[in-house]
Amino acid sequence: MVLELAAMHGQVAAPLLYGLALLSTGQPTVGFAAAFCLTWAAASAWRGWQAYRGIRLLRQVGQAGGHR
Image (cartoon, rainbow, N blue to C red; front, side, top):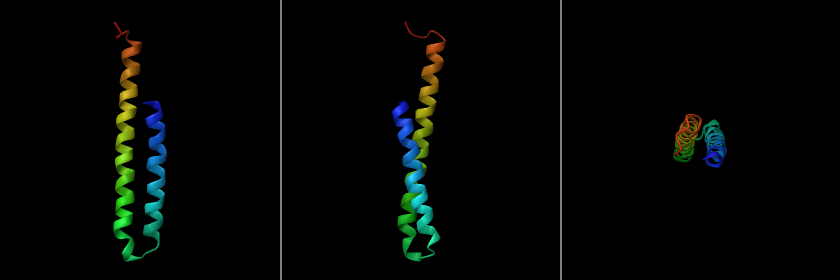
């Protein structure tokens, strides 16, 4: 899960920056590509947040002695 969370950083940053670069051109023809990239970044951020929550939960269970 830690590796997945680390991968999500790149999966958020790269399409976000590319989408913003597309939007900065001011060309109306880049709308779909920019929307795709920004949606991809948002989905990756959501998955990163889920992975973070999972890691946090596993740490809490481990600290509480939840293993049997």
